[in-house]
Length: 241
Length: 153
Image (cartoon, rainbow over all chains, first blue to last red):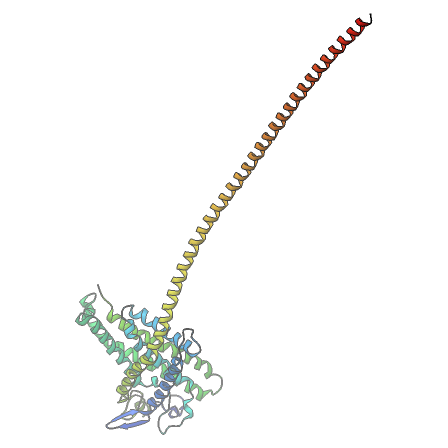
């Protein structure tokens, strides 16, 4: 960071440092899994509490879960279509919930209070591995959705409406996961960095609106990711005439 | 070399791909199945059951309303008919009573007339009788007077 007029000890933000866990020959980012397990645990706890005693007149957490369910159903139904949205609703919903919980968990939980030997805890979606994993899952699922629904006729999509589209559609298969993963990764990481830098520079008041903006972006990013995933699946299962 | 450090050197960096990626993918797939079993299926069941319940209840309520409306119109018709009939009955009864009254009046008048006529006839006959009697008595008396006058002489 020598090119900046004055040098911040940016190392305090610990950008790009990870807590490595060695499993056999593989190394994984421990901080990502620690936060993701905690957040998944919280999500599952909420789900278990809310579905423990479900009634026809919903009470308490059941209301929240039903609202979420309805929201996800509407999202999946409008993007994927009436015919097959049921098969893909759990996947879309899991993407939405996981990303949402990760983003908000990263922004709301004061992870910085926990000292790690290396790296720091934060949103699991601020790690490129997580977002690429999610984006590749989306790619796999829309291929699977297209092939399982239409068989080899799925590839008609590549020459629809004219064969001129073929190279663009092939390029799209690469740009879709790329844009999905980088959009999420960039937004969440940038939000964390902006908040960290602002806290570092002006520790009072000023970071608060940026934090709220961060919460807003986090929610929007979860929605965008889930909506785009559903849209890609819907595009793959759509019947052309 | 902070720039190198940020963008993926041998150790660390923002774009440090390793086994985190496949493991995270497996974790998300597992989470999908778990959430499907714990969240999407049971909540979906409850919501859809409720939607069914609401729909059937609404349909039933509509059917009942239609039935009630039908019954209401039927009852209104019946009421109208009953009212018309009642009016008819009242009118008939009024006519009847009037007729009866007229009949009774006519009967009474004719009876009264008859009895008056009879009385008049009786009176007439009695007067005639009485006159005849008087006449005959007067004749007798006249005869007697004449006899007595003739005998004195």
